[in-house]
Length: 523
Image (tube, rainbow, N blue to C red; front, side, top):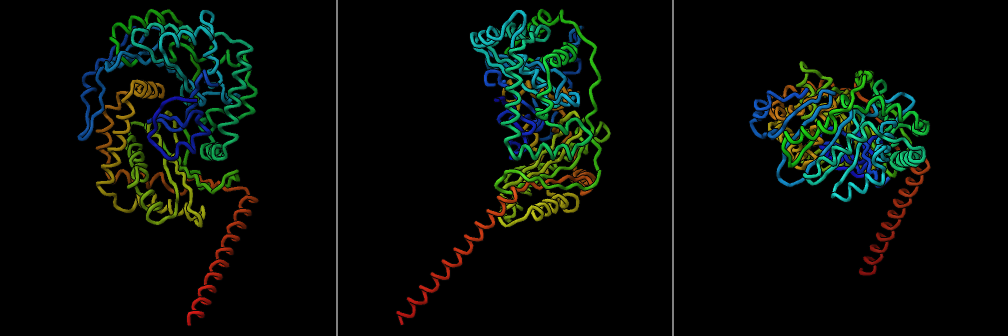
């Protein structure tokens, strides 16, 4: 299920993400591996920003984030519109973000947001599914969708002169979706098959799903985005209709438009197609906090893997849950993550993989920009002959050094540069810019904070990183999973290895004997 969200984190993404991501490991540069992307062909009162000029001038001592050409409006029905001018090519990216995702789902209806996302491509009273496809193709468009814990989004990329078409299509399916029994039966099976392929048939994904439940037992984000199979199977067409009527409304959406457009023209077109849509009374969204420091937890998960895998997760706040008074802790955790895993010269890679040879792979992940509390994640694969316990202790030793040993100025500068340049590169495309704006707006953050990010990072000191590490990256706040091969597989591997060892010994003995015999003849 293709999408195209770049990610900050990682070598870890493709392994861990499968439980929470149903795309080709596609995740946001500012969100982690918690999104389901759907390719529907494959399976899938105006408010003007008065402080814009001032905010656009924010910059770091090293790098700047370009926030020029940004305009914000709001219709009387509650629809927020953010327009970002980008005149490099005569195209426009239109994205509509609904503030509802898997974290908002009932306990017995996991995955309903994603199933509805599939149904959104099945036509309206005025535009059938086939007509929708023909219109997209006829005018050279590209479209797709995605579901995460916190939002569900839909997008179109068109030539700039086709912006009205994109707006008309999205406004139409915001309120006029047709719920057809036959279409539902098909897409229901498609989503369950995605579940089977991406999670049930993927040992690491299955393990990670269990790990997340253990690490976040009181947060809706402990569940996977796709949902458990039994809950998916129980979803009815009536459930989808209710979910659609509850959450799909202009006052629960942000419309992001990036491209070769004029803001005043865009606003006029948006009013034309969305202005008459009615707002609805929205339910209160579930809390997505997770208390940490519950005591050390460790379990084994026997899975059909060829080699053992280590998962470690510390419960940590995001920028949202840390709050304004403690935001430096979140920034410090982000930099700590980069000190540990910010390239070949970072500590875990350089020390544990290349210098000590204890690990074959290692990766970390931390979501600074998230609606709820999250996890400071580590995944590692030990080298042959190294136990999971040894690998775990080696990683813990390096994490402990963050709070005790000096962190060099070069490490801090590299971490800050990596973070900012990653965000800058993520915004190189129109889609990347729109994703950045929409995701932040959907989790309750103003996307203009990106302009302040370099300055915020510059203010973080080595002492701040050490303090955050000492507070959060501790044993009492840690959940660990050892993913091990089935015992019979492990036994076979041991037998095979022992046989190889014996064969090698026998071969060496034979070689040694032949050498001695040759030497004797020579005498």
